[in-house]
Amino acid sequence: MIKFFRHIRKSLLMENKTGKYFKYAVGEIVLVVIGILIALQINTWNNNRIEKEAEIKTLIELKNGIERDSKLMQNSLAIISQCVDRMKELKGLLKDKDYNYSQQLDTLFGAVYGVHSIRINKAFYEDLKASSLRLIKNDDIRLKIVNLFEDNYVLLDNIFAMELHINDITRPYYLKNFNNIDFLISASPNNFNELWIDTYYKNIVHYRIINLESNHIDAYNKTIPKIESLSNDINNYLKNYND
Image (cartoon, rainbow, N blue to C red; front, side):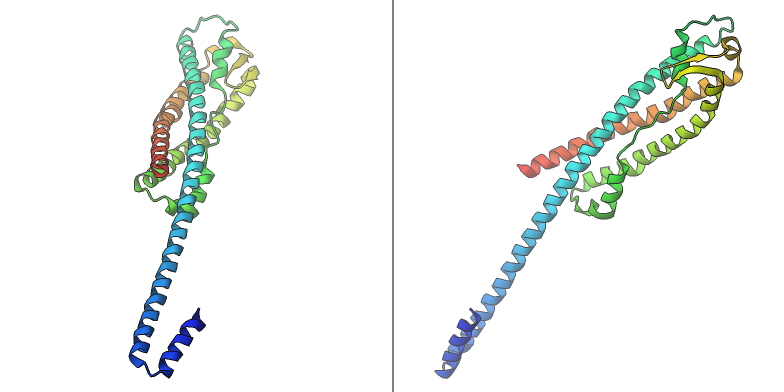
């Protein structure tokens, strides 16, 4: 093609058609510029398409991850709420120092001991923050993602870390004073009469109730709706894109 244009210019010069030569040269330059602009536009379209596909893939993976986390949180919340109800029942019974032992109490004792934590999807956000967060063009969705992980998930991570420290307190006591231990389900006291009037144990039960209600239950009740809201926003965004 270049040789073809060069041949035409050469012919015009040889024929002393200088005016036509310059007009043709200008036209040729214009065509070249237009060609370059078209190529740049096509390249821009391709880049935009690639980035859009990456954004959609990222949002779908994020949505699947947080929805999985939400299910884990809801299951954990149900278990914790049941344990707290049993602990409150136990706390009420402990006020009666003359209460007699029965095996039904073992389920209440068991509710006090155990670690409440789940594996939430933190790693994906760290990868997203490092490389792909910029791909998410919707400002509201991007802000919700940052708030969810930087606030709620960080809080939950701290709560789970605290849970391990609490277990360091309750574990030695339960191993010393109980047998047939089944975490969160059942535990049989070695010496019921001593346990029943033990102030230290009553404090463990009281503190466990406060800790679970003010930390786990409160955090889950705030995080689960945020996940649902973000998931709905992503669904609507993807739906509008596909439409």
